[in-house]
Length: 558
Image (cartoon, rainbow, N blue to C red; front, side, top):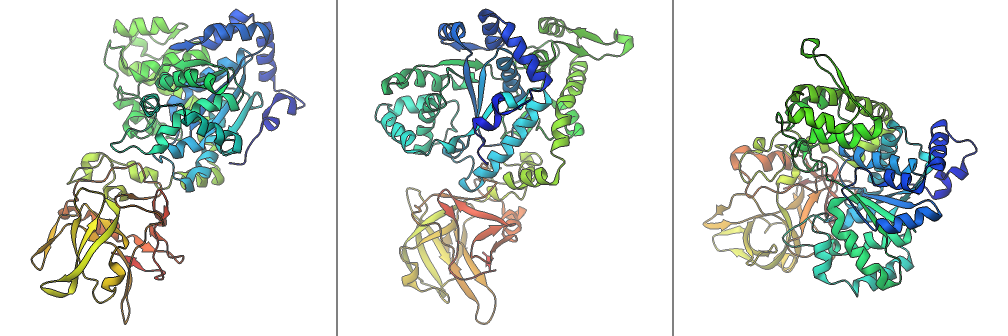
């Protein structure tokens, strides 16, 4: 993202204010400190440090920031923080929106480094489109990218200072509900909460706004910032809005959310499937959307009904909607149909903006082939563990790892085969039989780092079971040339290999040979003219960089 500093977006940099902005400024000027506090805190689940906010409001306007890690595509639940940002502006707050690109990388590498810039640009465009669709003036906001200050000498030194104070226990606990939890967590995930705490100081705000799932990060900030000589900030927490399945709405769970660029037909289809049990007001994502988005933005909600059933009814208070739904005088079908109308009115300006060729291209490059990755049900995956990835041919289904050849010898019963022991990050090395004798010397293979396909069904080759496949680049001809693929320098055995844009999927436990998953995926594997391994023009990578070969440009991979 081209960094947009405060001068580009502050009201002072614009000679003429929009009518809406003038109304907001006038409204804020006419409000008392108590009225401003009410606007700032309404619909929040929790506020830490409310007294400090009251003190600030007696003297000046509150400075608040909201940060979003640029990982998966924003969805309609993002309208919840957007509606609160509108409240902050009505209250006269100075609001900063942080595109937290470094956090996106640190959170178990949810966004590969190579895609960070593109995803920041996508977030900038889509967040601005959301704000415009609800009538929030952009020239009242400040937008900033995390790496524009988080890589500075001063910030880096504070990270080290903070890491000398925060225990591993506190860091892990703080990120438990925000950072992706895995069996073998990376150190980067432990740094994440501390960086979010430091952002409060470096953005010079009075308060940070976020979901209640970030509470432990907020309390870590309150505990440790004073130890660095920095002020303790206030914290404003939104409730977590249930997704369409009744659980938390998540970018990584297609069935739980509505994408901001979903068509009207997709919205109808997803709402039709949404959990909305008659009379049940708990974990009801449809009802929550009415409460936290529609009412704050519009002040009323119209339930559309057949005239035979009483006709349309306009509500000016959410509690009345909730009460009628609990009493089953509002049918789930009518509630969904009414939310569909309101939601499409919010999404239409965003869809229109993203009809431009430039933004369509940005969406596709920031999230390459994402729709195919997530299409269909996991049941379609067939065989093995399914891996939680939907599309039958998603490359995330194959388990490719960095391996180290710790021994290599000729197969006792086949002159053309090597018998290797390869460390792939497991307690014991795997036995691998490969037909490389004619192409690569025994000395070249010994102690070499290679790529290993680990979830094929073991297969006996001349009496010895091969437990994995060593992946190579090859070029047909006379003679045929073959080279093992090379992981990035500094790699370690067991590191996962992924295709860019497909980094969040989980591999199958074992690929079902009858489904030909590997064979179909392998057909699109190739070497680029720069000797980089690719699948359908998307690079094969580890967290350290690209997978390559030495010389075989345009080769196949097998």
